[in-house]
Image (cartoon, rainbow, N blue to C red; front, top):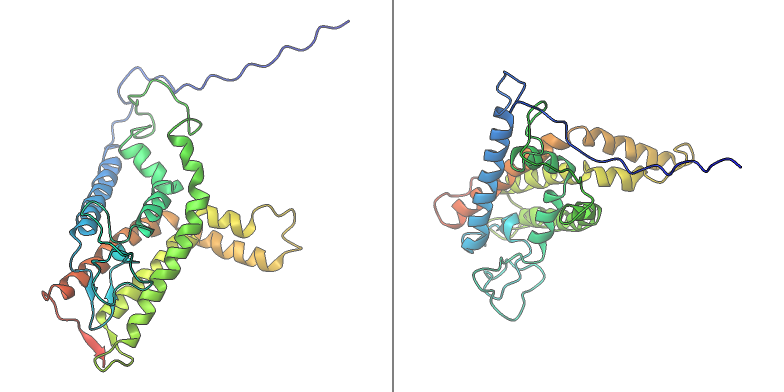
Length: 272
C-alpha cells in the first residue's frame, strides 16, 4: 500500500522583511501624507457641521444640505423634514439625519478605494512599496474588526436609497422660486451637480459592478446586463477620482447652503 499524500499546511502569512526603514530615496511619504490630511480635513468639517445643528435649511428656495437629509428630529426647521419627524428632539450628540449618515459613513469606510487610502496613510499597512511597516503580523481582512469590510455590498444598497433621497431634495428645490413656482438659482445647480457626482461615485462602486454583471455564466444571453456592466466598468475605472471629487462637492454644497441659510450670502437667482 502506498502512503497517503501529506496534508498540505496552511501558508503562514508574513510581511516581507526589510532590514532598513525604507529602501527608497524618493519622497514616498508625500502621497500618504496628503491622503491623511485630506481625509482628516473632510472628517473634521463634516463632524462640526453635523453636530452644529444650524444653518442647514433655506426655506425660501427649499435648499437642504445633504448632511441633514432626511431631517428626523422634532427640532428640525419647518419644511425641512420630507418624511416628517420623530416626536422628540435629538440630544446634541445625535445627528438630525440619524438614519442616513451612519450608512453613508460605513459605505465610504468599507469602500475598496478608501480602504487602500487609509490603510496606507493612517494604518501604514504598508505606507508605500519597499517601506517597512510597524506591524509584525498580517491577517488580512479575515478577523475582527476588519472582517466587517465584507459588509460593503450591503451598505451599497443603503447608499442607493439615500442617493435617491438626495436626488429628490435636489429636484424639488427647482419648484420653489420666488413666487412658489419653477425657479433656478446657483444653489439649485450646486445641489444638482453634487447629486450627479454622488451617483457617479455610488454606481462606480465595485459592488455595483458585481450586482449588474456578476454571477453570469454568459454575457451573450444577457445583452442588456452586459451593456450595463460595460457602462459601470467605465465608471469603475474612475472610482478613486469620484471618491475624492464627491468629498469636495459635499463640502462645497453644505458650505453654500450654510452661508445662504445664515444670511452671509444671498442666493444668485438665474430665473425667477
